[in-house]
Figure (cartoon, rainbow, N blue to C red):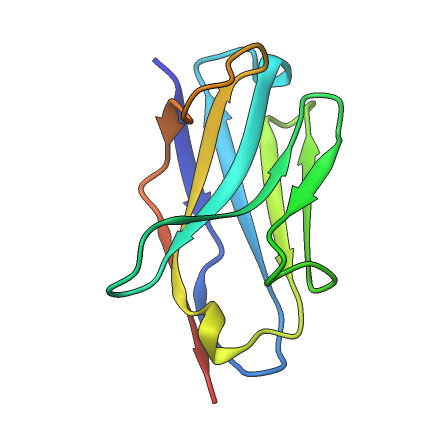
Length: 119
């Protein structure tokens, strides 16, 4: 049973920073491709950033240059460093994982953590 638990959300003023963390248990973490998604009220869930098991990263255009995704395979952790936050970044952020050979939808999900950016 793969479990993902996010932490680090909260309330921050525009221009501020937050770091989200996701602890993964119950699997060989190094074999997982990991990602962060977000869902704002009334909007569809969207992919924010992803990191392969080898550390290659990708970002949505809306967060490129502001967000960084990283992983620590020794600690079974994945992080999302969010800088220069904007009110439009307000959303519930979800950690997600899938096996490195899997090209379908992400299979494993955390419960989400709320990020609120005030103007």
